Image (cartoon, rainbow, N blue to C red; front, top):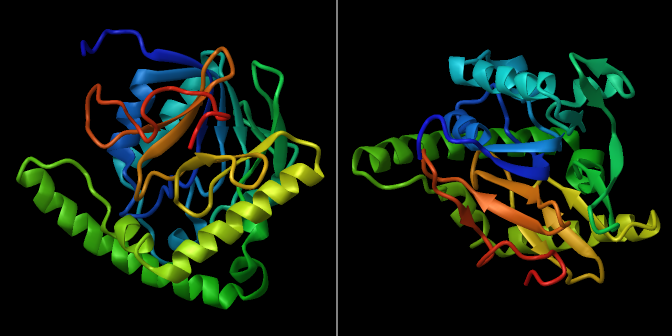
Length: 268
């Protein structure tokens, strides 16, 4: 792709769990993705900045700063930017209803798609029992998780040297552990239940770093994934179709988790 080629334009983009401020953040891949994708509205669905990690050890490389500047630049060019804080950037929940440099901060919001369907957009930690009722355990789990991500970073440096694309050891291990799989199912059911309670047609969330799109619980469930393990985003086309985009290579390499851009109704 030429450096001057116009980016692909969507009606909406949904990004979550970027975890700026951690070494595991795939900021370079995200910058490449944002260079090639634009939208009328960009939803930042929580854990964009990792306040937990920054409190313990300061880490902020130039690519992390570039991600922030790129998002703000998109806002200045006319994109509506909506930030929904998660548990790792919960410090921003003290500023709900305010604007920072054109960025709107809200706890949750209902997104109306081009086809008229309504989706509850929320980070999702509010429905994680560990985060809500045993925060010390959540912090311990975060430490163990970051240890795995550090190993993942070393592994992928070797893979890049050998010419292989990014691959997540931690994501692979997560899907091999029965308890983790059961947790994902319970989380999805809880979020779709909340969307139903609010009269929405579906839910778009983050938090668990597991990109997915299905209707197993009677409503459309869409999870944006993350930019630490899966490097995924959710895009809404101008006709209301939703697509999960995986971005594991620098350059123009689009790898949807689904066979092709399809409607959320048809997914899985």
